[in-house]
Image (cartoon, rainbow, N blue to C red; front, side, top):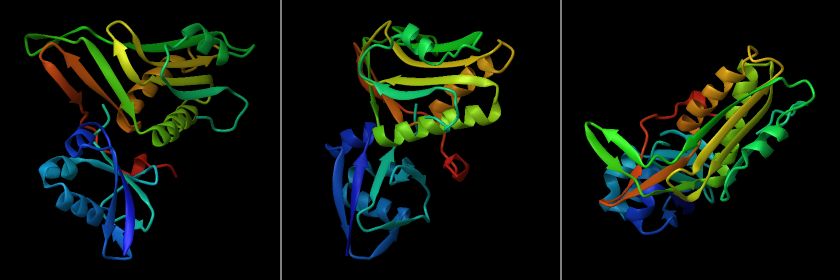
Length: 241
């Protein structure tokens, strides 16, 4: 017999009516596929969502044949809508409070910094979707927090590897309820000069975050609420070496 701790996020959490549960399986070791099928057997109403869900074991992306042992933590979630130990500052965090852009810029600059590129995401109140104007009242963000922080560090490490002249890196994601016009995420990269990768690194940072950092948003409007799920499915290359 083995017990596995299950974490559920976004749509899966709502379908199950809980964000965590324990599965007891009549075997000593299992694969991710085994756990997925056991979860479907217990919650047949969300079979399609579980089948399509991304999985993680102990806060790292996992794949069908990967081993799951007694006591492991297995998370299922839809596609998602740190420092490398050198002398340059790196900040990555989930924030329940508004982001202070000036403070973050100050934190990632050093005496040799001459340029900082900042990407700031905002809560959009209106979206043109196929000719129809959709109105958003607010967004609700949630994250698989321990894994999100690990993956933010991975994004920072990837930036550092591709743009070695980038100095400081900041990745901050808001969580909780956010009103129209509020900042949702900030990614900032500093460098000695503007042509040393800070623009490209910031752009890569936001694109990569949308792929591998487990954060989701629920859009709430006059006509109801729905989770916004992405389309990117992680591969073994997205795991940390």
